[in-house]
Image (cartoon, rainbow, N blue to C red; front, side, top):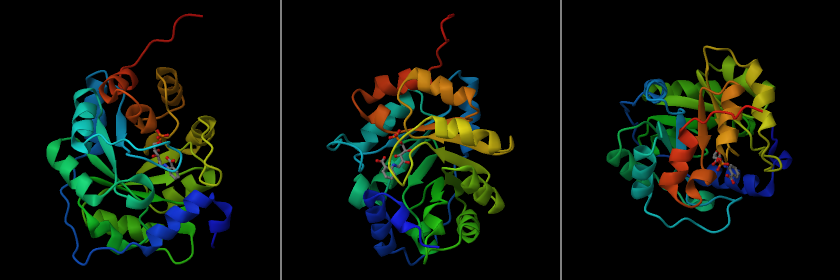
Length: 261
Ligand SMILES: O=C(O)c1ccccc1NCC(=O)[C@H](O)[C@H](O)COP(=O)(O)O
């Protein structure tokens, strides 16, 4: 299937750039830091298990965050992030594999490589603790098969976060062997963000899957809403990057009580 005409022009451009990016010649051998252990530690410390994203820019962000990624990452970890997501996509998100390597060397939490991996050799570009595989993108013609890529990533020692947006994509992720699934509230067809996506998709996910709510989480109320809908963890980018990163991380990883109505 080639569904590229059903996705937003910016996303089509992301896909096209991802197709053009090469891989690496060698094969990485990763000793991964465990995401579930990091989430357990956060829960024990009374923090919301959160992957905060070092996201310099994006197609839906105005301008670019010029802060040093290592300083931003350190501030996130010191203020409650259980794990980090680091963009390595250069053209649309201002990321790089070198940035991820620097961040991973500077902190001790698990690092998700945030990129648009379509082929096995692209897994070998940089070591990380988790890689992202997006069901929607891997349904495109000329990409590797999701199950094969999950196996190839695990063979290298990576944990795998498989991203879905609809119940049918969750089913595809589970069939392919996914153990960590992210439900993206951002629709890659229109780039709209709607937290109801997670609420409607989450009930289709079995309890033995680690379930992560991604995108559009901006306030402590949103955090509470995603947790109430069944999120084991959250992935938050823009709302952390926009402004005071330390204060934002603290505000979104510290649970709040709902006031009595
Ligand atoms: O963030 C974008 O503008 C974007 C556009 C097109 C494809 C993907 C995009 N984002 C990828 C992500 O998954 C988010 O960076 C991540 O979930 C954090 O989202 P947010 O908290 O809304 O920044």
